[in-house]
Amino acid sequence: MVALITLTIITRLLQGYDECTTGIDGSKVNMKNLFLDGTRWKNKDDFYDALFKALGAPGWHGRNFNALRDSIIVGQINKVEIPYTIHISGIDTMPGDVRTLVQDFCSLIKEFRDGGHEVGVVCE
Image (cartoon, rainbow, N blue to C red):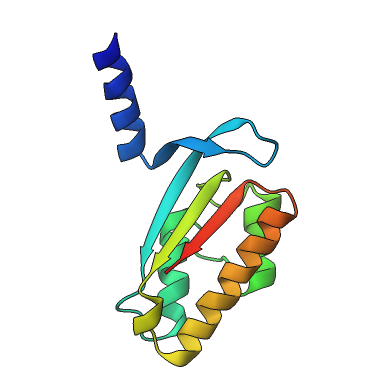
């Protein structure tokens, strides 16, 4: 039985789920983890390309925060729906305008979370 439970947890982690995440209301949720490596991003489009690929966004998705608010909070646009946490690495290696965009995006996601939505962000 222990082996089956361990295998299930490992499988869920490989699928991008974090079994140990607590939701806004204190309940346990299967939070998906989306990892974005920003170490090679040279412009804002590189950020949006990586984010949209991770979210499974349609090609017509707008490249602005209003469109992201609609697709993340309202939903039914991207293939990946909340709950999830977006992990963005490489902020220190990004050009200034890209770093500013990413920091603003991280603030936006924190605003969503503070508003009670099951979405998080880790920016490092």
